Each structure stands twice: as C-alpha cells, then as structure tokens.
Amino acid sequence: MSAPTTSTSWQAPEPILTDLQRQMNSGIPLNADQTRILLTSLCSDPRPVNVPEKVLLKSTDLNDLLLIASANGYHSQYTGMYTYNWQNPNGSDFAQMRNKKRFWKSEYMKLDLEFRTLKTRSGDEKTELSLEINRLKDALAMKETELEDIKDKKKTRKLAKEARKASDSAQSCSKIVK
Image (cartoon, rainbow, N blue to C red):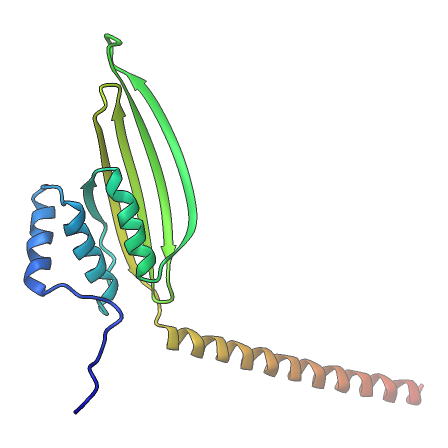
C-alpha cells in the first residue's frame, strides 16, 4: 500500500477555470470565492502566465485575497498608495479614489496586485483589483546560473592572479637587465 500523496497547492478543475475566465471576459465581476479559485489555480499552474486579470471585489475581501497570496508563498516586496479626491459639479457628493500597488514575489513567480478603491460620501465603495502573475525562472535554473557566476568569478580571479605574477616577474627581469 503506497502512502497518499499530498500536494502543496490546490488546483481547480479546468472547466471551472474556463467558466471564470469567460465570466471575466464578459465584464461580470467575480466574487471573493471565485477570485480565490482563480488565484490559487494560477499560482499552482506550471505553465508561464503573464496575463493581467481584472476583478471587482468588496474592500472587505481584499484581506482574504492577500492571505491567499501569503499562503501560496508570496511575500510583500513594496507597497505604495496614492489618494485622489474630487467632487461633482453641484457639490452634493464627493468621491475618493485610493490606488494601492502591492508586489508579491515567491521563489517561482511574481504577483502584481493593484487595488483601486472608489468611495463616495453616500457610503458606496467599489474596489477593482488588477492582478498579474508572472512566472519567474524556476529555482533549479536560477541556482545553476548562480553556480556558473561563482565559477566565472573564481576563473577571473585566477587569471588576474596569474597575470599579476607574470607582470611581476617581467618587471623583476627588467630590473636585473638594467
């Protein structure tokens, strides 16, 4: 009897993903659960992904999304925030636009999240999330590159040392000849 295999990341069945992507393409906003399914499946997909996805979420769901990103091995690289205020012509309402950018990076992938939150005086709040996942070089290739760089540095140092020895011996010979 073989031991059960456990996978580190959950992957949604293919039909669910295509339905979600079709829904996004038609402009219908996804809810937090659908976003979770899409995000976790994209994080675990071995194929390269470089497609910006737009999702509409309530601001209360953003923390859940960031927790999902953290659970998938991402850590925050940088956070920036820009706030804009404006008022409609009759002055009865105002809107505040907050734009937050977060960049998450794991060993294999980079995840860019951009949140745009529109909040009005009447209490309406809508948050749009722009999500982009970029596949990085896989870890083994990166480690091999690092090892090659170290070997190149050692080889360069060795050649420089030999060149110094040769120039020192040439100088000492020229002193003897003089």
